[in-house]
Image 1 (cartoon, rainbow, N blue to C red):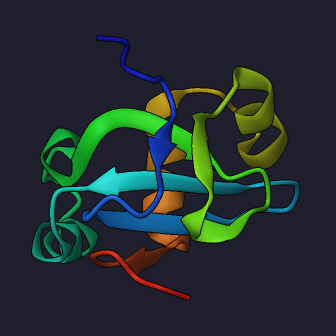
Image 2: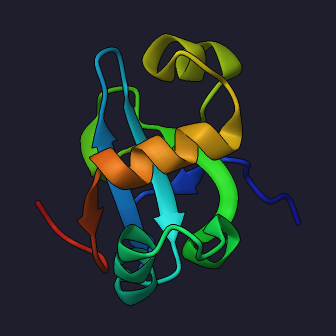
Image 3: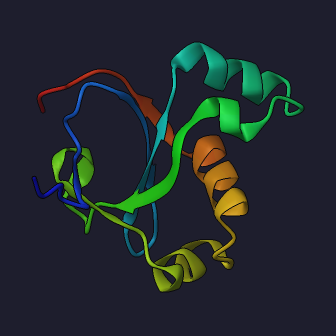
Length: 104
């Protein structure tokens, strides 16, 4: 069976929604508690916080739209780098946690 490379934003999972200048970014996290622990203790490895090392863009459709993987160019435009770890860190620090499936 064919598995699409895009992800539906309303999958029941915790996500960080980061409203950027040119696009909005989403990173999935394992749970709110781990995220909070990481914010208080940056020695916790990011790998324990993030659910899959993938940064998504919403194409300005908000957190409920179809998500595509963020391109190096879009990361560079927003964060001044396309280093995944740096971008993820900035998204986690500056974004809003959105919990399980939400209807707007």
